[in-house]
Length: 234
Image: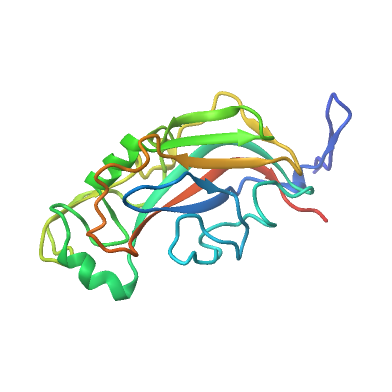
């Protein structure tokens, strides 16, 4: 059976389908309570500093799969972006878990779940901005416009949350893959082109974000760029 090896585009470029993948790029930032500056995802690669984290901590494979120093696509890659998806987790180190549980507000679930109240606060006060090639804002919308379309079904829990209280889990949209929002036309990011997605906070913070008063607790936001990307070939 015949197989397409390469396709010549009207502008003369030659594309090889085998060089492209549908696996997304992703990057993580961490939200704290109180005053907070914009958090730039895709600004670092593996081993780089995770924006907003305690330390800051160094990124591993669960934080990002971006190669290089960040803020730019590698010269031998390319991205056709059809959708942005953002999922949220409450992160508490084991040493802080007892203090976190001691001061839970009503309805807060055990980590890594995020409470419905905190999720609503983040959706209300957080703006997602995407820039390509250091030009205009290609995206500038509240973060709730970019549902996660992944994760667990979010339910009311009648069981123990660690403090013997019922809880309500929140989420940035539904957990079904069909819950994502696709763009009418894809956005193109070329190799070597500057690229960033930033969470901004027009009020200077997420108002009333409740992290149980524990300094090292964060809300992790993992941002996915879904579509087609050309894998490194050299």
